[in-house]
Length: 278
Image 1: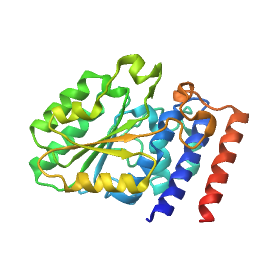
Image 2: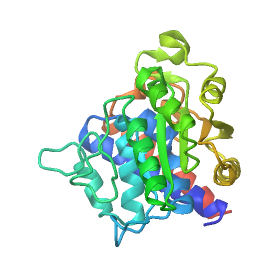
Image 3: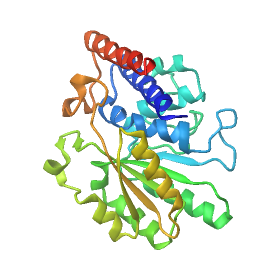
């Protein structure tokens, strides 16, 4: 896809996020929206995955370590063709396979169940090590929250990945600077994020999470890096794409009501129309 097509797809993913969280009357729109462009780049440009064969052996693996941002992942998977887009409206409903956190047993395209913060990177490291031991060339991607990296298990996993030189592993930190209780500095500062990953023998790359040229450059650099895992610190805006949600901590885990939903969808529709005129 070219840059404009990726922008259009990201806008559609944001519509799916807002629609699903509104229908559920619960969920996490803020961090899903901040990562929407990352999901777009991964699923429509970077990763080797096939909706017709979700379990193919040579597929790239993805772990959503910040599992509460499942609405973003589900929206990307639906648009990629792993399951019907209409099913996004069943998010968190009784009997729906689209649970509040990713479930690898029931959702096509999900490689790891996640939601307990701090644990997803360990699973991704295990997948990357498995590929090395089996001499397979698939790559593993893990998306972390900047609040999530306050968890100690993240750094145990990072230490192992760096020590074993897992250059088939790419960690992406969605650095929107907000978590459930406020800014990450106020709660328990993880900064400087780059220096921490460097200390664990990662090749660190900085990127703008909302600029596809920047994301493309970052992922290409990660792919070219040999001998060490890569960490992309992607600076983002919580709630990106919905004006009243942007940089507002209250939207970490709040669903829009009917009026707010209408406003958000109108903004996204206008954004989509503007992209179609380019």
